[in-house]
Image 1 (cartoon, rainbow, N blue to C red):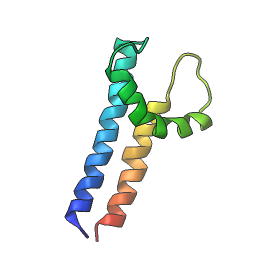
Image 2: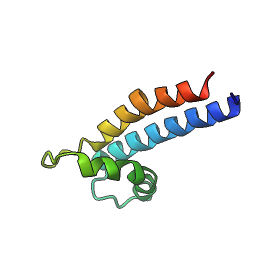
Image 3: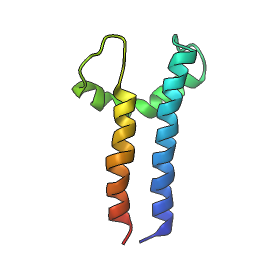
Length: 87
């Protein structure tokens, strides 16, 4: 298929991985979210994390949604897309 499309999908998934990890790190560094980076990361990652959060049980103060999202992106979605996009 088109190598440009393959590269775009790869970089999009990598950007989502980095954004999710950045959100996790920022929640440790700035839990109140009063910095300029946190709202941007929330806007990028919330469309991915919100549907997962609806199905995840609550674990008190621990939010495992980013870990589940990373696993879904890297172990399920990326291999499926690679199989579809590559001949």
